[in-house]
Length: 56
Image 1 (cartoon, rainbow, N blue to C red):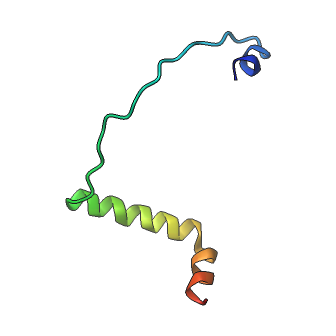
Image 2: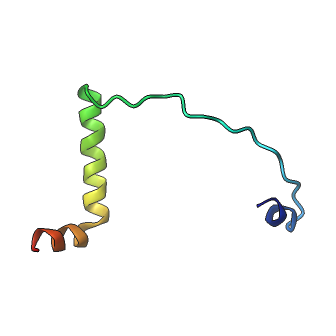
Image 3: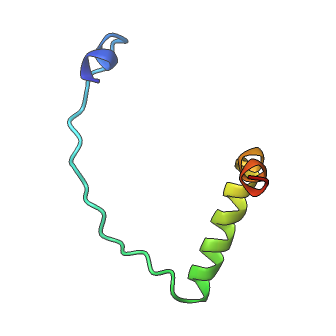
């Protein structure tokens, strides 16, 4: 990646590795809302796939 960036005349910067610290809790009311919105997005994005699976 550094060689690709430097090819455009931009110097590469060493970035620190950041570990995930947040634990996602889906048990509450806000968790239900997250699940619903993600499901709607998946259904909207892959509508034909879900239609084919429904008719198998």
